[in-house]
Length: 145
Image 1 (cartoon, helix red, strand yellow):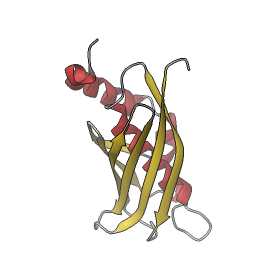
Image 2 (tube, helix red, strand yellow; image 1 turned 90 degrees about the vertical axis):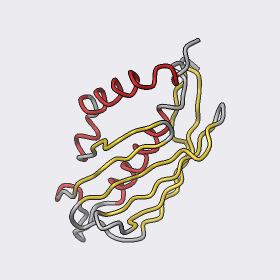
Image 3 (cartoon, one colour; image 1 turned 180 degrees about the vertical axis):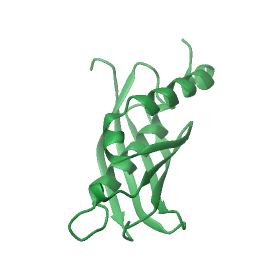
């Protein structure tokens, strides 16, 4: 069986192309992939008026989506082709408002077992200030189960 390590450069190129062209939800929010490596990913979300709630700051759901997407991208290079994964739990702490500029989510996979993976995300504004901190748990299954 061919491991992802053997396919990493081609897999990464294919992944980057797919993410840049086939992510309607990301397009809706404005999420962009900055970089992805094995067990790590960085995504960006520029400020947009379409994401604000009535008080003028970006809705927490948009920030949460950025964090969830970042962990998924970090995990994607660690699973086998026949494995699928889904978020089963996420905890996020919002520590400062997102009102202008852009934020980036940097995700790291802390542990990947055969059935569970845990990821950690720091979301920062362009000045490096922490906007949110997230811990995510994903369930890993075999395709078709």
